[in-house]
Image (cartoon, rainbow, N blue to C red; front, top):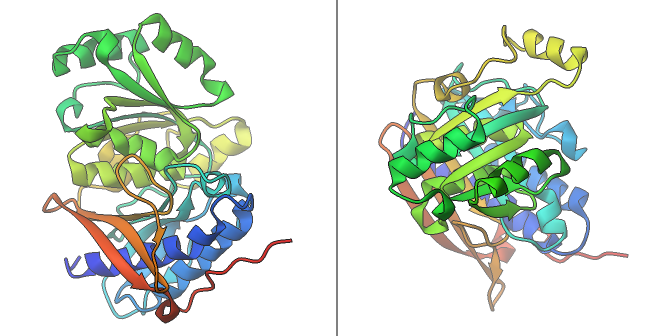
Length: 325
């Protein structure tokens, strides 16, 4: 992929973030997601790629979709796989909470896993722990290994976990081990990426979340030198058979970085919608301007760019005044 495309992908996430930001705190995740989706689809039309969506909006959100198989781009560039989440954290925006992002990952055709929309068990770490932990190990073993490698006491480790009922046994195991826990209300992608940024103070991300979000997180961690391991959790025979139909011969195997995002180049771009662990949210300024904070990364070069942009809103063609009721 041409490196010049990286900035074009940031423009896509910026517009989606700007479109959804007016819905912050208004309690309407559907319209917030619809605004982001519409803006992202429109902006992709100007990008010089021949793209196919392999991971689109999930059924779990019951939201409008950039559907799997949809063609994106102007059809004049390289053939690429695209994973998108126009608004990762719809509930976060609706409730005015942190860590909502607009996210995309792009790889050469055939590299991104076609992840079914179901839950996935996850382990995500930064560069220091990459390749040194195992998703199948008991939590106590994982913590002991991490503490030794990081030269910390187990009690000094910080593990991020989605605050969900299904994680009760995991949370109890972490508390029994006396580690610090940082809970995440939503925002699975941001949570899994957090261990790769030292300033977040997060050492490990554990627990289950959406499988499509796992692929997006794996793409980011590949660019950052971190690691993501996942294992699908089919809840019934129908889901099990769906995995097989999507090309996963062993739905219960531990998925490595190569399984998830291939061994070729990957570009990851994200723009903050609300403030988060490593990106600021959309901020409205005077004179009809807004500020966005984005990150764009490329696995081949390990280049990481943080981009702050000032936008003149009337030129964006967005409806940024929301009427409710």
